[in-house]
Length: 156
Ligand code: INI
Figure 1 (cartoon, rainbow, N blue to C red):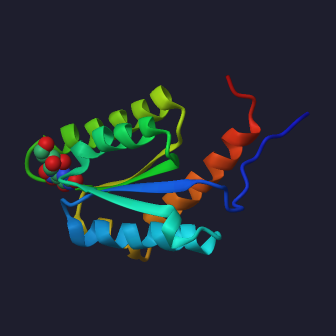
Figure 2: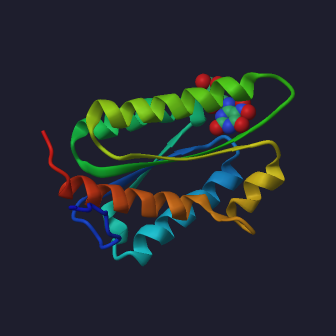
C-alpha cells in the first residue's frame, strides 16, 4: 500500500494569515501562535503575510481573494467567535466555517480553519496560548502538512 503523509518540513511558498479583529486580544494571540508555528518549522518571517478583517464572517471573502491570486501556498484563517445572548453566534460561526471550507474546495489551496468557536471568553483564552494550547500554532502546522501532502498527491 502506498501511504501519503504530509511532513512538517518547510515547503517553498508564501503563507497568508487572515485574522478577524473582533475579539482582537484573543485573535492576536492566535496570530502569534501561527507565526511561531511557521517559524519553528523553518519558515522565514518574510514568507508570511497578515490581513486583518473586521470579524470572522468576513474571513472567507478575504481568503478567497488571496487563494485565487495564486500567490500563496496556504491560507490560515484565525478568529474567535464567542457565544452571546442571541443566535448571532451561530450565523457568524457557521458562515465562517462553511465559507472557509468552500474557498479551499473552490481553489484547491489549503485554507485552514483556525477560528475558535467558544461559549465563553475563558474557553477562548485557554485555546489562544492558555492551558489548551494555541490553536493558531496548530493551524500553522495543519497548513504546512496540507501543503506538503497536496504536493505529493496526484493532482489534476
Ligand atoms: N465576529 C467574530 O469574529 N466573533 C464574534 O464573536 C462575533 N460576534 O459575536 O458577533 C463576530 N461578529 C461580527 C461578524 O463577524 C461580522 O464582522 C459582522 O456581522 C459584519 O458582517
